[in-house]
Image 1 (tube, rainbow, N blue to C red):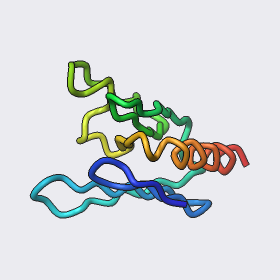
Image 2 (cartoon, helix red, strand yellow):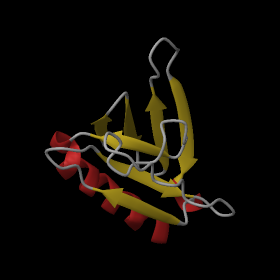
Image 3 (cartoon, one colour):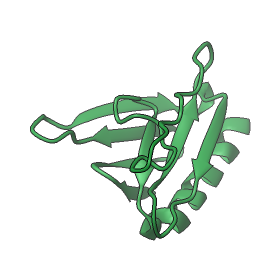
Length: 107
């Protein structure tokens, strides 16, 4: 299962979550998380005006603070390795991915 985000994507194979971020002018960076290690998830659906995000919480780390401002729309910063901004077209896929992660996390 994979969703396309803003400058990256998130995939989930049933056990591992892989977040690939592509910064402008830099090589793509991949971050892998085991679903069993995730302590929580956050999902903010995108709207017509603002991108949303998916975020995975790990033990001992606080959730990234949402940026405030007229252009950010309340998303974590791009530098946060455990979150990814998503466009409105990915809302459905993101909801399914988050549900699958939650199910694997509690199993």
